[in-house]
Image 1 (cartoon, rainbow, N blue to C red):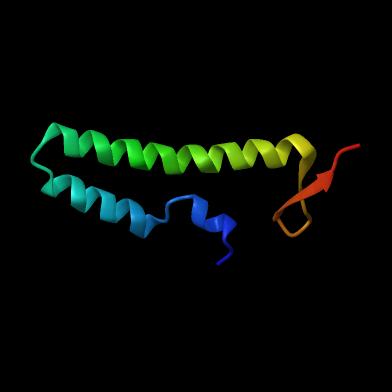
Image 2: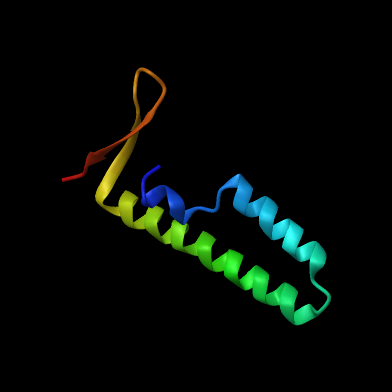
Length: 71
């Protein structure tokens, strides 16, 4: 797995967040966890927009998404 792929929380990370939320007793703990999760997701969104700003996505014949340089 590449370093870039680690910017988006994995299914296991999300499941771990849910388990931790179930164990939270205080509103502050829940808000802190949601803030952390939102931050990780926002990092991924920013990376996607930065990448797409410079490149044009296209679908390959095999069904994969490719990125080409836009000039």
